[in-house]
Image (cartoon, rainbow, N blue to C red; front, side, top):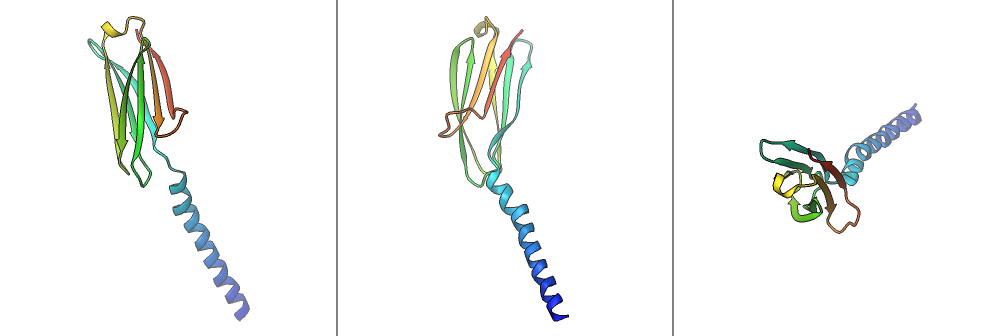
Length: 123
């Protein structure tokens, strides 16, 4: 009987350890700052490019944002604090978008592949 109790207690300890690893350790290691929403909103005299980024990591993360309107590129940098979100907004006016091609690329600090890439054709 004592042996069964010991096996039962050891099983509970192992189960609790597995639970802690699955719930607390694995998600925090795999979470990264990612884009959550990319959209272009049509206004009366402009279009508005809006990109929302969220940081689920325990440290600040820097992003390089590149927007090209008809091949003319502009760049911005966003530093997102832990647990915070950031919304990047770029106004695009008809005078700068003759062809109407808008390309967005969002790069994580130190990486060569974009975490978000989108191309839009404006009306």
